[in-house]
Image 1 (cartoon, rainbow, N blue to C red):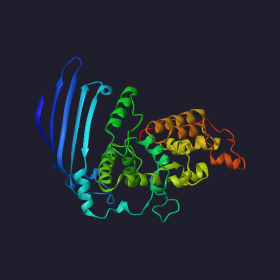
Image 2 (cartoon, rainbow, N blue to C red):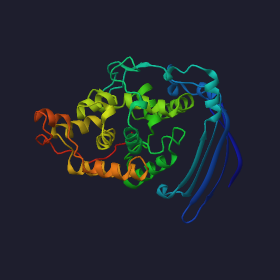
Image 3 (spheres, one colour):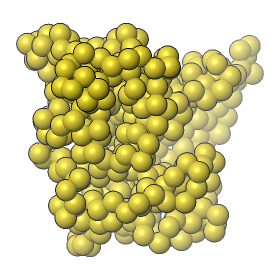
Image 4 (cartoon, rainbow, N blue to C red):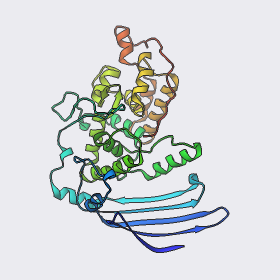
Length: 346
């Protein structure tokens, strides 16, 4: 049993801890770790060089509070319970008093490439015809992406701790990590400032940048950046170009089912584009996944019953089929079998 334990992390973060371990059988444990009034800039300054943040990453002043509690059978992570809180209110208040935040204004971004290096410059702002303000998108487009990628986006502080535990539990059952549990905010942190490598150091840096983003930007701006820098196909970044390539239309005119389809390809857009786009239409398995997403959106109030029934009845036809058929809505010839829908770890 540990009571009233105190530890200092990186000479900057004071942790209080308590817990107990019972030999069993089965062996069980319970632990709680808490950090209060952490000086965020001091914590960042104490990071070792391998974990230091890129110069452009947000570094708000102020403090934060955090608490993590875990309990369950020691050797059975799938049965653990988790309770985690991250309070960024003081950090957000300090950021508002600090005034100008660079990412709140138009900026230029070069997306990371899987093979290394960076892609072409993307202007994230009204100076680019490809940029689509989130306020101009139909709500069903926004909700399709958040429902598919990060259902708790508007409520969590940048991390979905329940989703993280679920990802760990699934990985424990299958003996490998099948998905990463990353939130939209974490993906923005990675896309803007880091590379595609999957290392522990990158995840730590990603977490620190995510806190900076959540403290300095409104949720709608984080989502707006995400929608305009996310990849939707080979060399295809942003929902504006994605809507034109996949459906031959402006993103503001996407139907609920088209929006749900675009959301479904985000986990592996290059692979899914190569397998699906030449077909002219989704496979039956893929269409079933899109229908499931539409049902979830309706359950969450993003679609009325009438909108749901209309979306379910609508076929999804890609621009490749319309071009091949000279404007017809018949699907084009089938290509290679498409992979089953699924989300690899991020």
